[in-house]
Image (cartoon, rainbow, N blue to C red):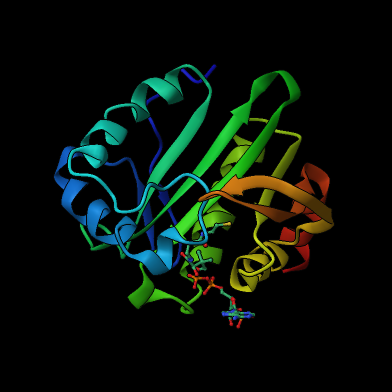
Length: 188
Ligand SMILES: CC(C)(COP(=O)(O)OP(=O)(O)OC[C@H]1O[C@@H](n2cnc3c(N)ncnc32)[C@H](O)[C@@H]1OP(=O)(O)O)[C@@H](O)C(=O)NCCC(=O)NCCS
C-alpha cells in the first residue's frame, strides 16, 4: 500500500502530475468530446457538470488504498493538460491495468506512448508490479498501436466482453511482464 502522495513523473516532453480541482474544466472539455469518449469504457457521455470535481476528489484516497494511480498529462511544468493516464491496481496479484486518453487536438504526437511508458515504469519499479495489462476496442487501432509501442504482447480477443452503450463489444487484451519491460528499456 503506497504511503507517499501521488507521484510526479517527468519525461522528455511531459510532466505527469496529480490533478487539482483547478483542472476540472479542462477535464470536462477533454472528456466531453465524443471522439474521446466513444472508445473508452468508463466515460459518461455527455460528461456531466460536477463529475470532474467528484472524480478528482477520489484520486489521493484511491492511491493511499493502493487501488489506483491517476495522473494528468501536461506539456511540461505548469503546462496545458493534454490527457490523462491511470493504473488500476490489483495488489494481491501485483497486477495493474492501464487506462489513458489524450485530447483530440493532440493525437498522434506520441504523447500517449511517452506518458504511459513513464507510468508503466513507475508500476514495475516503484509499485513492484509483475504484470501490466490493457484492452482496446478493435475499432480503436490507435490504442492498440500504443500498446505495441510499449512492448506489450497481444494475448487475444475477448469476445463480446463488455456492453458499451447497450452494444456488446469485443476487447483486445495486451500485457507486458516486468522482465519484458526491463529488456525493452535496455534495447531501446
Ligand atoms: C488512443 C489514444 C490515447 C492515442 O493517443 P496518442 O497520443 O495519439 O498516441 P501516440 O501518438 O502515442 O500513438 C498513436 C499511434 O497510433 C497510430 N494511429 C493513429 N490512428 C491510427 C489508425 N486509425 N490505425 C492505426 N494506427 C493509428 C499513430 O500513427 C501512432 O503510431 P505510430 O507512432 O507508429 O505512427 C488517443 O487516440 C485517444 O485518446 N483516443 C480516445 C480515448 C481512447 O481511446 N483511450 C484508450 C481506450 S483503450
